[in-house]
Image (cartoon, rainbow, N blue to C red; front, side):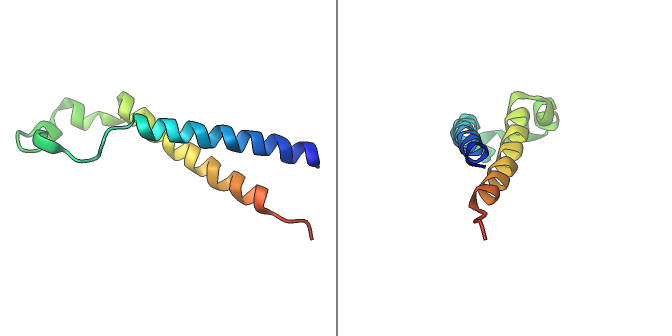
Length: 79
């Protein structure tokens, strides 16, 4: 059981570092001056899910779920 806990702790640390880097790579959610000129409704605005920003958002969600699950598993105490 100790080896499994050590392995999960290492995976948890890797997830923490990765999610920090991914969040820092993302752009802000404010539309800025692009919203004034209608840039938010352009091709890039509509297909954001297929762009790099969309992929970063999906990876962030997956890593966030992994973070919560791993934190809950590692917090389980022996009775």
